[in-house]
Amino acid sequence: MVVADRWEFSQVVRDRAVVWRREAFLMCGDWPLAEDLVQTALLRLYTRWHRIDPSGVDAYARRVISRLAIDEARRPYRRAELREALPETPVRAAESAMALDVRAALQKVPPKQRAVLVLRFFSDLTNAEAAKVLRISEGTVKSQAARGLTTLRRLLGEPAETTGQSKGSHR
Image (cartoon, rainbow, N blue to C red; front, side):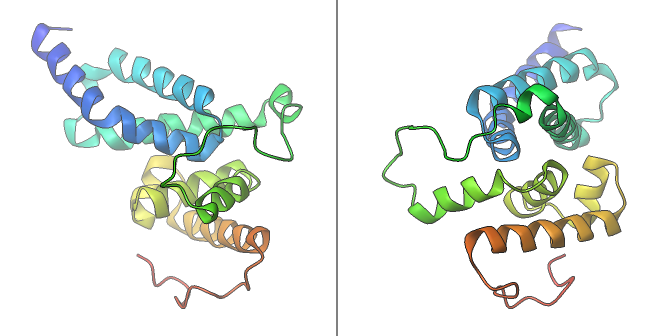
């Protein structure tokens, strides 16, 4: 990797790593694991930097992070570590109880649905963009998002249709 490429890579990491870490956390629910997922993604990004289109860096990183999070959730030893309640952690004053409830409920949503929800509603990607990141069809993104939202609403004790949006109205 040439010096200019290293500098460009460093700039992208500096600008995007925090966002990728937040997305990874929402997908896996564990800060240390989120950091590991991002580090693995950065390593893969670095080794393929010369082949990646600069406009596709975010999509590539999100694809790697989401796949790693889904794979990690499927590992047998991870299932043994699932907890009923969140561990005691300091909460910043700005975080509301609702945000904590949503985050806890999100961890109970199946991994693939969780990845779709994070990409669609936290990262604000379109169905097409999320489908490209996850390498699945737009129809699968729509169905996984619908199932994930239904599960999330059930876990939060909300009626199934509380958003006022009709099916397919969000991009």
